Length: 245
Image: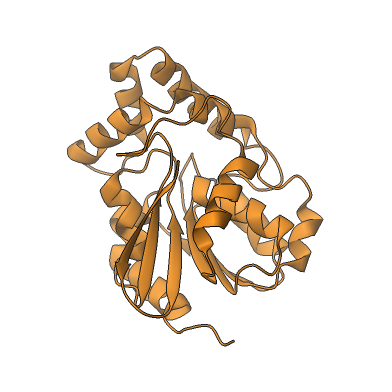
């Protein structure tokens, strides 16, 4: 069961689909500073949402839940897993959105690169075994600087997501990349430098795949933490005006 929470009011309306294991606070970061109504999703097995069914973690299944949550909303932001789910959605419904932001995409028309996939599978194994110390070490290795509270919260979140981590390590969000050539939305792709979980080559692939795309790369492995002000300005400029029609 996906939970949708609305913040603000009026137009434009923007749907935010967080990444896997996003804490409640982390899920709201892309919505910060946006005008209008922001609808932030909580996916199954996250925060106060019920646990996902065993067979839930497929991009098409998540995309179907995202589609239902749109409810007429014409612009969306997806982070990591959220970016993959939205990519899957627009590959089957190319006109469903007017504006789309893909933040830190981890895979598109191919599985994750080997090093990234192996890292995610190690996290999955630790979560499935309930090995919090090992999972904590793996999460800490990806975090910039001293973010003790964040690492602890994310570790606890990922302990519920062993099956999901195993699934996203190898699945392909968009098996037919040619389907993306029909997407009519303007697409903004946000990439990070040096992020093992979100390789920049995936962002470049996305920038080439969508007909109306712009890519912005931050010189940081974690721009959501290190470049919040710049991200807020970027997203507000791209999404702040209601779509025509």
